[in-house]
Image (cartoon, rainbow, N blue to C red; front, side, top):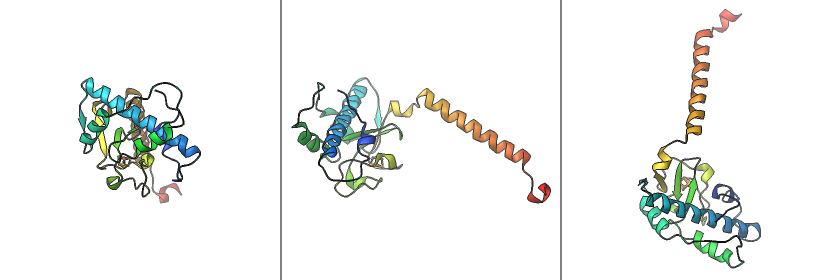
Length: 174
Ligand code: SF4
């Protein structure tokens, strides 16, 4: 299964009209969500552990994932995609920026989705949300990300040290 957009991109479109490009976006979003559920099912089968307030719902979603195979998406798939996304609470959205999976449930979402929305506002994901799920993979920072964060921390620490050792009062500089 391939998706052109990931759910972070396709859910970022503001209007709730469901015609035209939004039909395509529903399909892409549903494919990405199903992909996330299928990946979670495989990761759990491989022995990864799961945590978070929405872990039970994520297990349900992972156990009930449809298989979308082939490269051609028929017209009728748009209605199926909409129905798939409408299953509030058991549709999974990968959010690698926040290192979590979102089991989106509108009423408990902290990212303030529009009324009636069936997708989270992942770019505004907030800590402490009841829709959060993590597996072991999320708890291990990928090495490049870890290196980048450490390098940035070193740079900020060095800048702070330089400031502390060279700072003077305005009076002294005059
Ligand atoms: S705030 Fe909650 S609902 Fe919104 S993206 Fe993050 S985990 Fe999902």
